[in-house]
Length: 111
Image (cartoon, rainbow, N blue to C red; front, side, top):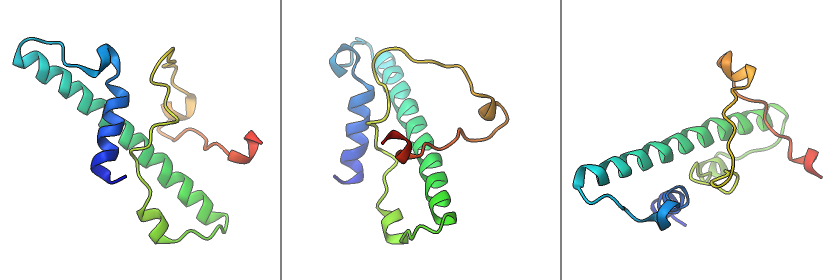
């Protein structure tokens, strides 16, 4: 999937309410809906970029061989890990309050 398709896939996943259809009858309302969608998509891309960068840095510091060519193929448009439906908690963890990233998850802990 190319980056344009990835961005549209993420936008469709975010814009699931009312079956992803613009419901406003007037242009300004549609622009508001699309502006909010763009904001949320950009927030997801920023979040994913920050955490992918932190994960790559940790792996490199641990001595794991990571090729720059592989890093270049990473996409911040992934969204399978995001709860698009259901409940969301907005309690801010203490490390985030201090301006730090949340601790990275170790996939081996899930085994």
